[in-house]
Image 1: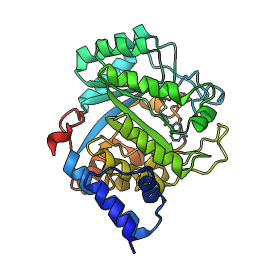
Image 2: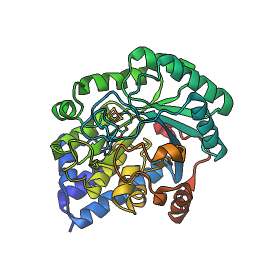
Image 3: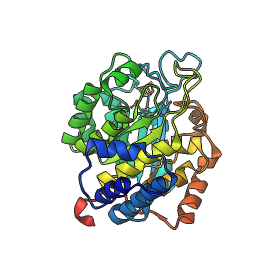
Image 4: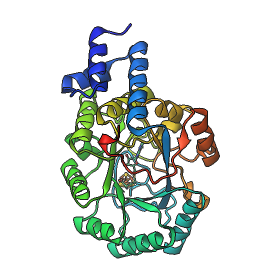
Length: 348
Ligand code: SAH
Ligand code: SF4
């Protein structure tokens, strides 16, 4: 049974109407099977209408797992002394980028912990060299840095930046990222947008202490900041962190947040996150059927990949490249031949 109000709110959202905070809460709170099915189907229609059937692949190279931050949720946190730490050499990173290119991918994501060895100049050098030798679209995801770094890297040729807001709750953010503030993170996101980057953000669903209001607020911030890409993934506890004993985020709830985000943001790029695939072998398929249109294959060289343990279970052959192509065609979708920039909202 679908409640009349659920139907009304969902229909209004699908037609492009504005949702109030209460409407968002109402959609997020539903647990009825039929309502969830209707929500996911609406998100799938909006995805089809605004971004089509193409799936964008972004090859991710995790070039350093060193981190000066101590986020409670993350296995790379600086107090995790059990982790084998690595930094790929500059030449190795360029080689990995060439590998991404040779596999036919158009976008490279360079991700790392917050690692000061990779100075403004070193990263600029990398961007110039990779741009020059591959022409790939370059996304950076190296954490919070001074505004001058973002500016310099944009000038060097970087195209996109990923920096998740993580949670819209300032107190939870501060608690989980000791010494850091949500406000500063949002400020960085504003600066990045102004500098002309395509900006990716997102959150984790199921963080200990997070409530449904926080999730509704997350969606409101996605709209307010007009992010171009939004990664919505479940929280997965890592055994070598203070959150080891916390339960993982719920996949259905994660998909609900993602589906609502698709419906209200229309033409954004939404990844079927790797974390969704870790919780359930069908997690990424379910995400692609509930609004997602991006997959980020892990292209980190095998020797390093196992040590980039943000959360456990990340390295899994089920998530390999071949499987991804298989998954895409089994859904009747196709790999996009382009770089996958956000389409302008007038395209549909
Ligand atoms: N250091 C950079 C980029 C690497 S972390 C940064 O923090 O921005 C990339 C993302 O991994 C984070 O934004 C966070 O959303 C996600 N992440 C970290 N720990 C996680 C966990 N235990 N479960 C799920 N996602 C996690
Ligand atoms: Fe470092 Fe990013 Fe992990 Fe925080 S989430 S500990 S900043 S790698």
